[in-house]
Image (cartoon, rainbow, N blue to C red; front, side, top):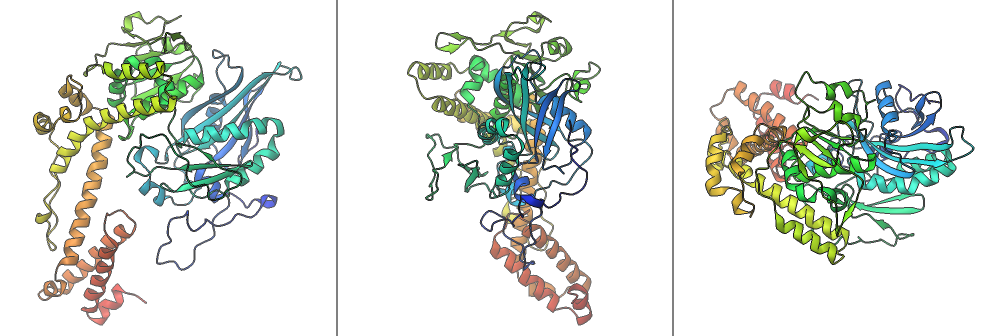
Length: 593
């Protein structure tokens, strides 16, 4: 039976306790224009981490059904409810007995909605681009249990506990489910209410701080990375325990999966897959279970870090999804999406897609699992397709055989899995950085010189990105300076220019450079002699300056411009000086009481 999820604003929690305001250390600093912080709305801290918790069960008449949404007044559209129901259970081809964890990602429907959590500009400013909150999608983190139960008419107990969030913290939420779900399946709703109330006491997810997250008698200790953090390849160390009782469980990462384990079947093809992901190519991952499917998709999309993955991706997708027709139509080019599926029916439905990765059940071949081989699309069969990467794509870069040897040697020496993952992640990071550094170097050259920025003139424009000029620059400042891999780098860049990732990267870099240009212009104004400038200026020109300075000040105070606090104070002083030079009637207009 489905519990209605309501359509109105969230209510106070009745007998579940009174919400408390955000704690000072974990919240963004208040604006100087507000003396008193407004009380936090109900469930404010909970919704900083999660949107809601869902329970999906199997109904003999309805199939998968939404049994519970908590908090009960969280709004989900009918389309979202349907998607959550279908994606929270493995399909019949997977045959998952026991407990299974996996994840999915769905498009938000019903138009834009304001998120329940408080304004998180503090989080978005500090978090890496790959860990930003989703604005148009929800993540679903699933703990599914299927066990024999003679008391149930169908003979099986089948239920999923699902955490719905906008945050891509797969490692954290999987750990949370491992603690909560087994207990919930035994004690049901009272346990879930208690857990939600505990989450509603958590500090805000502030990057760069050690956060202690208590749940069910355990304290999970995490640290969300910041966008300025440098990769640390040493084994993770536990942070200060601050005399916490019980001792906290340290989670090395909130988002990183065990990359080596996830990519084990495709290690010999990891660079080809990296190129396909970099170019935003449509890719289907056909796996034996939702767990393998979702982990492979998430591992592949994480291969581009620190570059933001700008395409769509679905860790687990079924034929019941509302976007099934959109993704399977043959009347248009396949979309730029990495699609994780388990139903072999998709081989027939998506035969027109250019790249299909078929993964079988893990089978050991010596020290490594049996490796997926490169195969031509013509060998793709509708039924009983063998594992392989079915594609006509030819990699631009030569394979790094030394990497595979290092990983194989690590397995022979029984090197810890987290060290193997760090080795693989470092290789992919350095590969991505070697590709991106020449683009960054060329982009920096398009920035006007600082000496050309003067106080009383419109700042010069950023020069346009010319692809031919960039390609010519590679001879002197190309990836060969930092990467030993040989191959057709020029061809890879030419294809990259047509991908969503180039567009996303360029827009972000251009935005950052424009903000830097505006900040430099503001600093130039603050360093100029404003009284000398005002001597021969009309009142209209002076008022125009006041309005422009105020606009820049507002943007800078909202942290949209990278300026120092000293510059903000001098700007405010300049505005007061200029207004003070005007007649009283204009002062009254510009500074109303």
